Length: 209
Ligand code: ADP
Image 1 (cartoon, rainbow, N blue to C red):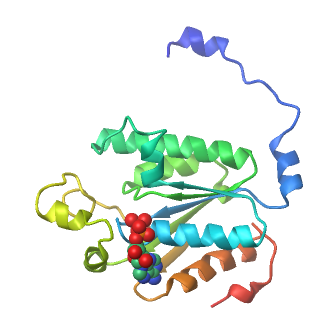
Image 2: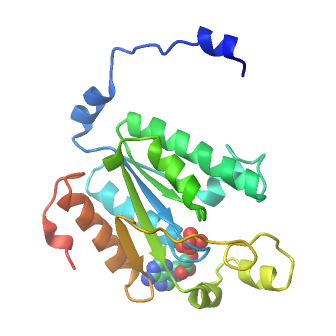
């Protein structure tokens, strides 16, 4: 896009604003950004957290890595450049959903710190909750629900995170979960508890574990 076009694009102020939607929905919109190795449990836990939030009548949307790659990002591969673009688009879509007043859950490996930082910089600091799904690679490899580790070990899959592509662990995630120490339900409880404790949703701290 050239500068001339930029000058001609002016943000249109809308009558219904974010604050109005927030009031209507009675929840604090935010992004629950799940990051971790493949098979660490991101999709499983994000899905279970969304189901619990739905049960609590909260308004949510789950953006899942594989699903987004079927549509919005189906033109992207797994090169480093494409992975960065994948996460950038997810960040921008999440930002729109936060503006819509939703609690957004994203389940992407998002291996690079810089990309997670870009995603977090798109919203207010307390609207981005980084959730590190921390599972030793040996366990991920045992689980291997999609057979991807096996494929990568055999050389049939290049740039696979943890094998021949790096995973940069979050240094200061808001929530750090070891799935080898907690059941899926306990992982859900930890996250719901956090949301209640810090005022994202209303509820009793009955989820504390
Ligand atoms: P990812 O989205 O990180 O690639 P998935 O959620 O697709 O990972 O797969 C994780 C697998 O590990 C699932 O088959 C899930 O049932 C299993 N699993 C076993 N224990 C746990 C746990 N405590 N938390 C999350 N997943 C677990």
